[in-house]
Length: 158
Image (cartoon, rainbow, N blue to C red; front, side, top):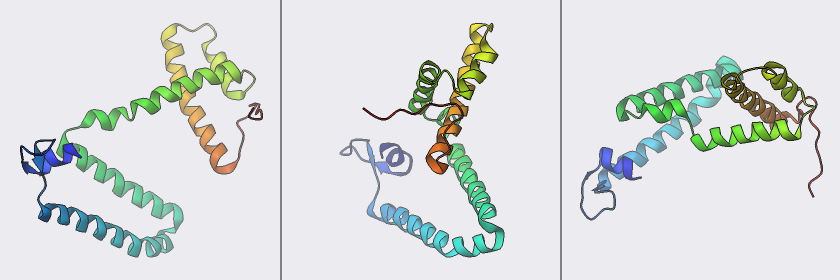
């Protein structure tokens, strides 16, 4: 991980990134990772018993978000934090357009067409992003619960 080596390593012209981590620093990173896994394994069950499953998931999510904020604040990489993964975003937008083409009778497609029937291009662009988000949630429900999106027609693979 060149970025990590540059941020926390010592200059080394022989390395491809121009920096390297000493054996001591590498062992500290591995030890901290192992300590975090060990603490999470020990505290996971009592926390779930104390707060319940949802409460424990909420608490862990808050801890994770705080960690992300600290990481972004120390590296200054706010753009990646706010924008998310651009490939996933583009893929979801393409999927939303394909959904409109091939699932015209679905509730999601009807939701989009009702709102954008006479709308200007800017509104259609905003609504396709909203459709992509709704579609992502619907597909998540399909993969986790087997709940088929309303009005969607499934075909056998050829």
